[in-house]
Image (cartoon, rainbow, N blue to C red):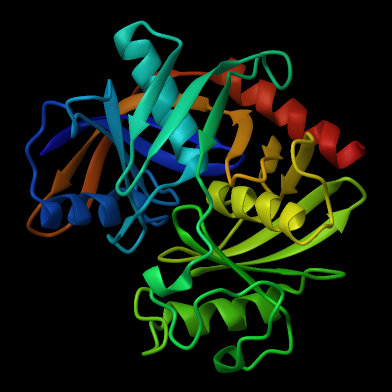
Length: 314
């Protein structure tokens, strides 16, 4: 089966994106497509698969996010900005409410982060502190507390945004330690059957740096819902103030962020389109092949590269 795709990224979180509003694949088939297109050894590669759908009667369009392993996430906020941009262009609008798997998000075009960088603002929430909904056994709320089952002395805060996140503030991110804790959650132990994302956060003055082991993906350069959860956690624990703009950095780039005491978080970041094309996926063998790129957006790639260069120099 041949699919028209856009290769895109939000803050370095890269994805193939498919407008699936007129397609009728089953969940199992979409899992096959996600694994094939996200495979870094294949012709496309990515941190998952983004789909634009029409799943509700009230929203202009909906978003679906499939992980690298074919599982479905509640959302992906870096991906949401790309889906929002594609929806805006398809429908000729500048703002919308987007249906997610378990919630909704308000999105709109925002002033550019930098010259040539298409920027989308997204507002999600409220943040949910009730871990019994995950479920996470043995607690109903975890704020700056140890989780004995993690075999870690770190203090964690548990937040659903709406993806489940365990976040911990550290002096310096240790990738090996983060990967060990993340892998334990990824194994879906009995106390955490649906797994969770794990992030270590460095506070850098009034800004944050976030590194995430993402459920269904692994250690990643960027995770939008982790940046949102980290923003709320920083305000909830008194490190930063609610209703105050800040920047959240990661290895993929940066977003502007703000959290309210009511649990709403706004992120404003890039929605960069790198190229358009088409690719074949064999739904029996699960193999992707015959990628044809029809349009390259070198201008957008260069604009984002300038942002990254500026962050590195600054």
